[in-house]
Image (tube, rainbow, N blue to C red):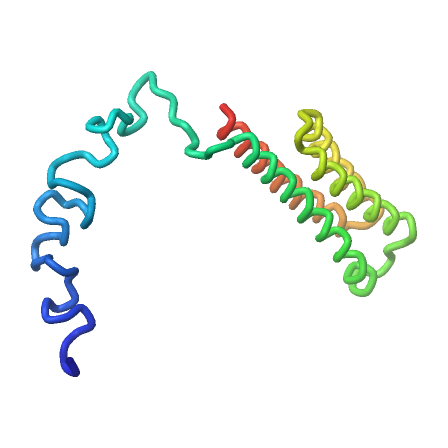
Amino acid sequence: MAGEPAGGASGGLPEGGTAGQPAGGASGGLPGDGVAGEPVGGASDGQPVGGAAGQLRRSGLRNPERAVRGLGAGTLSLEALVLLLAIQPIRVVGGDLGGAAIGAVVALAVAAVVLAGAMRRPWAWHAGTVLQGLLMLAGLLHWSLLVLGVIFALVWAYALHVRRVILS
C-alpha cells in the first residue's frame, strides 16, 4: 500500500517475525533450516558439524588440485598481461626504458604464459617463484619493474599460501 513500509504491515520485519523474535522462530535459525532446535547438516545426517579435535576440515572443493592449478595459472596469466600492457606507459611516463628492458619484459611475459600452461607439473610452482625473483631483478633495468616485481611476488606468495592451505 502507499503508506506502509516496504516489509509489509509488520513494519519491515521478515515475514512471520515479531519485534523480539527472529523470523525462524525461537530457535534463532533461518527460514527453511529445518525443525527448530535440530542442527542443520550436523550429526543428524552423519556429517561433522565443525572442526572438532582430530577431524580434518576439507576444503569443500570437488577437485582441489585443479582449483589450485587454476589459481596459479590465473596469477601468471595476469602477470604476463600486466607486464605487456605496462611497456608503453613506462616508456611514456617513466622515460628511459631501453631495448634491453623491453626485451626482458617481453621475455618474462612469455615465460609467465608458458608457466601458466605448465601448472600441472610440480616444478612449475618453483619456476613461478624464480620468475618473481627475475622480475624483481629486472628492476635494475628500470625502477618500475622492481615495483611490479614486488607486487607480483606478494600475489604469488599469497597463491602459494592458498595452495598450501587447500592441499594440506
